[in-house]
Image (cartoon, rainbow, N blue to C red):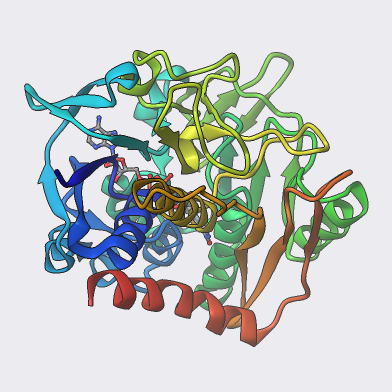
Length: 379
Ligand SMILES: Cc1cc2nc3c(=O)[nH]c(=O)nc-3n(C[C@H](O)[C@H](O)[C@H](O)COP(=O)(O)OP(=O)(O)OC[C@H]3O[C@@H](n4cnc5c(N)ncnc54)[C@H](O)[C@@H]3O)c2cc1C
């Protein structure tokens, strides 16, 4: 009988897994992919939509298009995961499989901060981007605060990228603003060494962007963010809410002490046989004890690794594919340029990760990062 793989989540990781499985095994495997969201979109679309550069819709593709390569796409809410049985309940229906891949991403939790919903624009939520874009385009000047309200969070450079792009927009509109970014983390980009972080933080200063590290906000009131020992006033607050593993994953027994699914960093195996977890829902500790950043490229590469391993196992071979930890994330800096945080994140005795200089080439690569995936996965 045909073997079945059940993929929970149709974001970067889930789609890459489905695509690679079909490429390797074609009709010899049944692939079911479940997501509540009808479309795929890359994360950095939000930065472009926020500054009014390009709408979210221009980068969205229906996940249903995967049916063209033989994937059984199910739109629905995953209500329960039973890793011991390699099964899940989707809108009341139980789906069992021979291998289970959990790719459910990170859930945004604005409720963890009192006042977030009332006073902040959630710039990580596509549904709140139109409201945020309007507020920014009508902003006449004053204190613009970009707050990171928890860590880990997706794409660590994104809040700084937003600050730089907004600053550039304000310049062309002649808007006078004090731009502040705060973060609970001790450094702007903690995956880099202290020297590179300092250099990046000087760049922010050069753009008149104030950076406040070690700032863990406790609540928000009208016009001010509250910390234990101080408050920061704002005229407009763009917020990155705390993240957590989705409820259905937290209830599944897959989550470890980190609050995320702890996996083998090379094979993506969980503690349950033939159950894998990939992407933002996972926690991978690097050699320097820091977590692997949550990035779409890593979710994709993990998904491809898992697909290769499942394909080998289903074909009666020893699986050899492993996740190398090589990759990175773009950081757009304005003037049509981008930098990249890249390297070998799983290197021993410590990650080899650098921040490149800004270039037009990296910005072109960033645009291609989106267009190539939309083309490859959705035709
Ligand atoms: C502003 C911003 C900029 C970014 N820039 C970059 C970048 O430059 N490069 C980069 O590599 N990454 C970037 N990222 C990060 C990237 O978007 C994420 O790391 C990536 O989406 C993670 O992929 P994933 O497959 O793990 O999860 P996701 O892509 O989040 O997919 C998870 C899927 O699970 C579904 N789901 C969850 N719970 C349920 C449920 N109960 N039932 C049904 N479906 C469910 C969701 O609908 C979702 O589609 C950025 C993110 C943001 C917010």
